Structure formats: C-alpha cells, structure tokens
Length: 306
Figure (cartoon, rainbow, N blue to C red):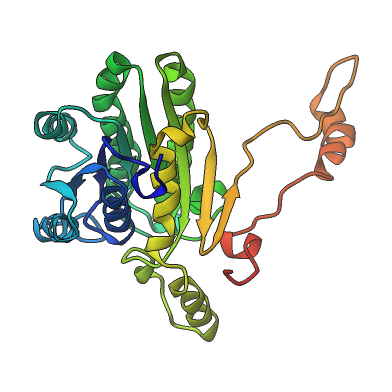
C-alpha cells in the first residue's frame, strides 16, 4: 500500500470538520485517498448559532487539491442529524468506513458557579454527540464487518483542569464509551480508539491571557499545530491499524503518547474485615503512599513541545 494512499477507497465522516483540528484531519484523509463527509454545524465556541461556511470551505480546499468531499451541517447532539450524516455518506459514496468524533464546544466556569444549561449543553455535544454518531454508524459497520471509530478526548478529563467540570466529565465519559464500543464490537471487526490533542484551536483561544504565566503557556500551545493531529487519525482509520483498538493516544507537536488506563496500583488487606476505625488506622495510611496529586495537564506535561 502506498503511503500516500493509506485510505484509498475509504469513506470517512469527520464531525467538527470545519474547525482547525477537524479540518486538517478531513484534508489529510482526502489526500490519502478517502472520500470525506465534512460535518460542521458552524456554531460559536459556546455552541450558539450556525454557519455553513466552515464546512463548505474545507470541502472546497479538498476539491481544489483533487480530493472528493461533501459538506453536512447537522448537529451531533441530535440523533436525527447523525443518522442523516451517515446516510449522506452512504448515499454519496456507497459506504462508510470511519467516523471521527471531533465536534465540540466549551462553556468554562468554575464549578460552584456552573449552571445547569452550561453542564447540559457540553455533555450533549461532546458525550451524547459522540454516542449519536457512533450509534448511527454501528449497524453499517456491523453489516460490513469492519470500521474504525476515532473519538477525541482531553487531558482535562484524563488528568484535570480548572473551570471545566462539564468538559472534563464529557471527555472522560468518551473514554469509557470508546472502550465499551471496542469491547462490544470487536467481534464485528470494528475498532474504537481515542485521541487527546494538544493543539492551537479556537477553543484553546478562549484560555485567558491575563498574566505572564498564562501568556507563556499560550505561546507554547501555539507551537502545537492542528495539522500535527491529523497523521494519527489517518493511521487509525487505515487498515494498517486493524489490530489497534481500545487505546487512548495523545499527540503533542511531534510526540505521540499512549495513555495509561485505570488499574489497581496498591491494596490493603485485613483478614478479619474492615471497620471505619481500622481503615483510618491502617487501611488509608497504607494506600496514601500511592495517592495522586491534584494536578492539571500543564503540571504533568511540564516540558516544552518537541
């Protein structure tokens, strides 16, 4: 298989495909031979409004480069729209081989000030939206005996961050969703993986830059481009990744990470059983040696992008 045509004959659906990361993924998939459905509602960072231009612009860029793509403007939060999204791919190109759950919004606020609409909207777009797209394509993948699902998570959920309880909960929920899909659909030849991106985008552009420390952090993020996220997505969509499923990856400039998944790391045993008092005296002191610190992504990824 030619490296330049890793996705030759494939049909891929990219949600949030009119944005920075999604647009780069859609363009590189097309460059590698895929026919692409570029889905984007075209709303604001907070999820308001809609605009067909972002999706149409990426489709035009793909066509100008000699590729094949069509736009779709539905909302991932609406099941009828995701059903139509997949049907559009099949009607236009005869099949569907990969979905990329990249669409997202932000409504950041410190937890004790977060309101229910801010919580609901972020969960609807990220977590329910990922479910909607995956569930809509599942019957097609099952029938053809193959398919790749690529879901975008975040270190806000994997590690932690300030003011993003809604986003972090949704993004960690996507990890659980992806693993469940990988387990349930393995027998049908369907694989499911997550990517946690480090890249400058309009959502990252909402980070405050009020202090020298925040400004320095943003400058580092700007060096990590959306285009650097696209190669891993292309690989995961290809037949070369047929054995890769249930994993969590990260892309940070020229680094690719494999993230750990929760497993027991320490235990405490008492043959006669536990009481609240013995837990305080023995159990918790034994476990405390392996406690995790309250860290943010920037605390863990403390070195400059390479």
